[in-house]
Amino acid sequence: MKTLMRGLLAATAILTMAPFAQAQDVNAVIQGLPDLLKAQYDGAPQKVLPSAWGSFTPPAKPWKWCHSESYQGNPWRVTVTAELKRLVDGLIADGTVASFEVSDSNNDASQQINQIRAFIDKGCSIITSIPGSATALDDAVDAAAKAGIPFITAAGSVTSPNAINVDSNYARWGYDMMTAIGKELPDGGNVLLVEGIAGHPIVVQEREGGDKALAENDKLKVSRSVNGNWTANVTKTVVLQAIATNPAQIDAVWTTGSESRVVAEAFAEAGRPAPVITGSLTGDALGYWKANPDKYRFEGHALLPHWTAQTLFRVGARLLDGQKPKLNTLLIPIPAVHNADLGNWYKDCMTPDAVSVFPVPPQDPMPEELMDAYFDGAKPTIGWDYSKTPDACAK
Image (cartoon, rainbow, N blue to C red):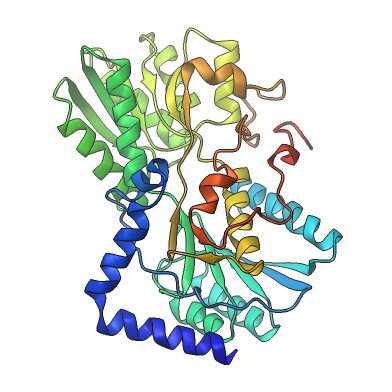
């Protein structure tokens, strides 16, 4: 504990006294990463710092693994927790971990703070989390650090320098999706923008990336921008309205949610040609594609719950195994999915109504050699075997 506290105090001193030197160190780490990972930090909105856990000495086994959830009210989040539990259960089976405990604050930041502090009092060895706020949890995260407990986030970063954030660059995602549209439409075309909840930080980041790609391609023209709120019925309504008020052809739909199926349905119902659609691939979209291959054109990515849980687990397991993360923010590439690849992702259980079925990438989107680049003293993740990922149709 004394060693950890000295390390944290030293890190704080560096943060306070030598920000320029620290920026140089961070830049050197990023420049030393493989190209795929290095690209994730281009325009990343998260503040990237050296890891505060470079001198961490893990507690003795067996470890107590605690997971702080902010919301379990949709299938995506439930799947994240179930996959994390499956992986930790494997460590419980071999005696490496003693227990796995989950809390759910139901989108109440104060409640999540109380639950994190309860985990600290229980002597958890590690706390993983999908945080409900970027800033509200910082004091609790710092309290965990003072107790020698790493706090690791997924699907959203916190601003405490004592956290390890396992996240993605959503500005980069927005850029990549618009760039994919440009490749599919080399002669240019009209693009309908369907965004999530207006003002949400991720929505702002995605739009910044999309606008950057548009600025680089003057052949693409925005026909209209609407907000689908990442909700299927809202998305379908605003897309149908946009189609009705835009008689000119719409060649592509840049959407950043998981509602590509209802976008395709809207164009089919309106009797309009199928546009190129971006977004995150889902089981219901694959089911719609299988039933209507001429009405669904997809060039997007797979922001999926299984690999979100897996990258969170792998970072936590490596840290407990004595490996040293180099940065406080580890950005994970979102795997691309092309229309020609859809057959490799489709499973028989995927129908147009399969909104709770999530595809599983055919290959590990974050191979171990890429994960190694984020750690000093890297070695294979304990309890990790991608081939054991449950099939998308498993009950």
